[in-house]
Length: 105
Image 1: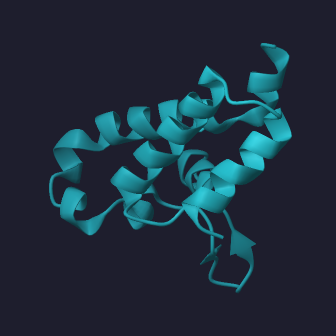
Image 2 (image 1 turned 90 degrees about the vertical axis):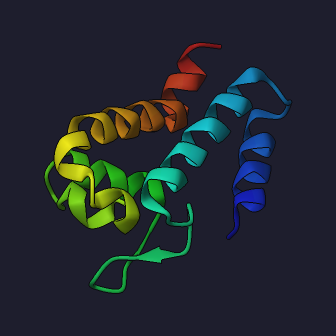
């Protein structure tokens, strides 16, 4: 599933284009920027499919290391910017949480 399909699914779920779709897309783009990974089609070590938001949640809650998912080009400065990357990923997760978007309608 590519980004266009992810957005298409969210549009179908929301049934109309709103600023919530923009917020969701912003969150996904920030995740892709920090990790240099696609939002879908990822697999864990056990071969289980996982989405990018799920992968990031696991890194932020300590299940996986944050350094394992950050783009290697950014990781070279990661020791000084660890907190910034973590905050950006937390913001990105907030942007993609559908349950929070539904509660705000």
